[in-house]
Amino acid sequence: MTGAISPHRRHLLIAGAAVLGAAASAQLWLPGTARAAEVTLPDGVFSLGIASGDPLPDGIVLWTRLAPDPLNGGGMPDTVVLVEWELAEDDRFRKPVRRGVAQARPEYGHSVHVDVRDLRPDRSYWYRFRASGQISPTGRTRTAPHPHSKGGSLRIALASCQNWQHGYFTPYADMLQQEPDFVLFVGDYIYESTPSSAGPRRHEGTGEPYTLEQYRNRYAQYRTDPDLAAMHANTPWVVTFDDHEVDNDWAGEIPQDPDKQSHDAFVARLTAAFQAYYEHMPVRASAIPNGPHIQMYRRLEFGRLVRLNVLDTRQFRSDQVTSQADAQDPSLTMLGAEQKQWLLDGLHDSPARWNLIASQIMMAETDLQIGEGKLWYYDAWDGYQVERNALLQEFADVRNPVVLSGDRHLTMISDLKTDYGDPDSEVVGAEFVGTSISSNGDQDQAAFHAEWDPRMPDNPHWKLIDAHRGYHLFDIDRHGIDAQVRVVDTVRQPTATPSTYARLRVENGRPGVELA
Image 1 (cartoon, rainbow, N blue to C red):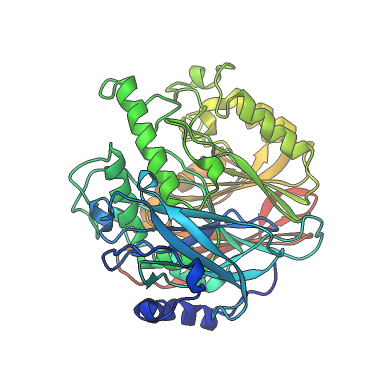
Image 2: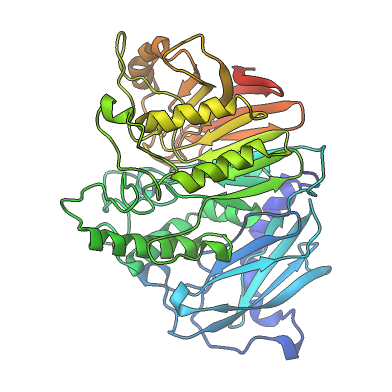
């Protein structure tokens, strides 16, 4: 994608947001006949910022949530509020493209999801909202390339696992400077853990969230992180969830601790968690939850360069196993029959040069046992080996499959192989397990390598492991993928020093990944 604005210009947009908000009462961009009916609201209705997501060649989702008292349910009246929105070709809105009025409804936490269509492909746009005489910060977004576009390039930032209590979200400050075309977030946007004073920041509330209001408050707290807010405002996101958006290690309708959470109680918790997730994410109406169910797996196209398959590895999976024998049970599933067939159809029928799979959890094998024998990491695809191995066999007939994952709070970059029991088996793809934004905090690197380096001989498919906080950055064109492991020196302070820890390369037509 081309036409990205400079970092200097982008910083001006962010810095100008406060000025724009202060001048809101004097600046009305819609004709008087089209203005929304005014409702007097408290100051700070845009405290949770703005966002965009799921770019199409002709469309984008624009998001905000009105919340003048964000950590106490939102602070909005129990009534529908009309919110004006505008999209333009310039940051001063002198070239308007689309405008309209959306409803912020109390039953959806006064969130707004505007699915703007009939846009031009591969274009930057600027957007903003207005409610009760207050104007939001200005955001920047971008559409996907034309469906038949064969050239060009795409820059993707892979992120996951941002625990408020473990540190500040400093990697996003560096990510903003790198100007990705979109952010791919593969899970653990919030953590449901109880408040603790052990880290640099403390969760709101008094315990884990179970109710809708409690989940809303937790999301609202995370949304107040300034680096996260700036990243949302300046780049479209493609999101999916893992476990901590609900409950650690849940599977289907089974909680981590079924002896403490009854089925009915956990279904109610799922319902609340999915509702709050939808309310805080820039996703389309197709993701409006139906009770304890939400449609999250979906496919996005970026010309003929990239097809992105976003998975849901939580709602349809069998319960997590605890033994090697159970992990090899052929009846177990990670994806469910319908999603698995959807994925295979999309991979085999793809016209794209690169077929990316966004998987919340690691697909390559993790053998934790040093020396003889195997000890697998059961929460990942290792716990569902028959389905995983069958999928990797299919990869042999797929053009350039690359899996982008999270969950581990580590960088783990691997070759994908048809048989991990045979070191000489065919390499069919590559996997990048992104490290965390803040989860696990600032780890002792020497201690990490002392623990994990001895496992490298038992996992010869691993090309790189590391425990710094950060994200992965991918530059994709027809010839290959250049990947950077971007890290920061600390997440215990509000600012950090970024650097490139490693560079890797995936060549077109050559499965696997190599250090550059």
